[in-house]
Structure formats: C-alpha cells, structure tokens
Image 1 (cartoon, rainbow, N blue to C red):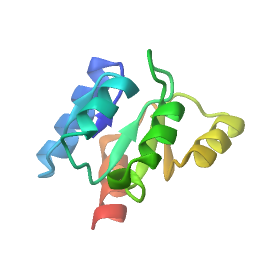
Image 2 (cartoon, rainbow, N blue to C red):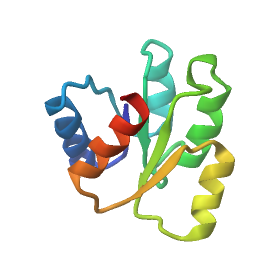
Image 3 (cartoon, rainbow, N blue to C red):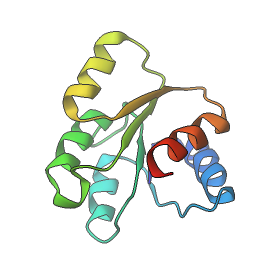
Length: 116
C-alpha cells in the first residue's frame, strides 16, 4: 500500500512495484488508508508524513493497533529528513525511512529486504 497525498508519488510507487509483480493499493491520506485497511490485507506500506486529515505518524499509531497491521513493515516515504522526525516515526511504529526524492531501485531493495 502507498499512502501519499501526491498523485505523482503514488503513481511512481505503484508503477515501480507493479512492474516488479506486486499488487498495490493507493490511499490519498491516513484516513483513506485506515478505511481501505478494513477490507484489504497489506503486506507492506509506504507512508508520507505530511498529509491532510490524518498524517503519516498518526496513521501509523492507529494502524499498529489493528491486529492485521501490528507486525507488517511500514516505511516512511517523506521529505522529512530531520532526526527528530525519524525518532517520532520510530516511536509511532515505523519500520524504516526513505527520503524523497528517491530512486525506484530503493523501493525494490526495501521490498525485497522485508518480503523476500
């Protein structure tokens, strides 16, 4: 699942992962993602930090309460590079952090690391 308010980022992640054989669900913000997670099982999530309605950090906190999301990898995909934000992400339950702009190969490396 890719959760980002930027259509171009969602499209790039979707295209990269779909071309590698992965099925991708898109969400425009944390609220949309929480709704979609009620009917979809995600194996991994890429989440932006700064989004309307429910931001990435709050989304992770809420997702980690859901039984089907407790242990899946959640990677922050954001322009936020400051150490304090990374620490907040880790405390919220983020598994990793990728800084935008990113190369598609970075996504595939991360996916292969966690999903094999």
